[in-house]
Length: 140
Image (tube, rainbow, N blue to C red):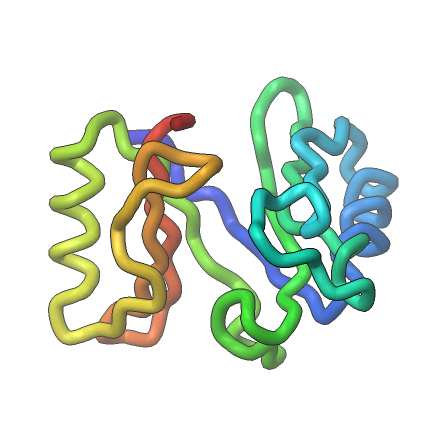
């Protein structure tokens, strides 16, 4: 199992924060995707279209932190203190389901384990201790 990667959410300041982290730690911003790039039947509201949907800071070949902005309607409401999740990359579907089922027990499903446009499977769970987890399995 790979080590969990911290995933940070921001109230519209993700790009600014990640440019700061890049200046502090070095490395490269990878996979910078904006909400306007999300496949949708509806146009993205202009107020959030340019916000960051996902970005990774890669230092010496390893992703050290990932993040996104957290506009209303895209995940839990932003609040300082709930803006950090741990991201897990499953090796296969069985591992993703096992982690999801175990972390859900006594916790809360934020997003069920299901296919997305960026992953074969993806889920968000708040466990029984209030720790937020993201579970990913590969690219679609």
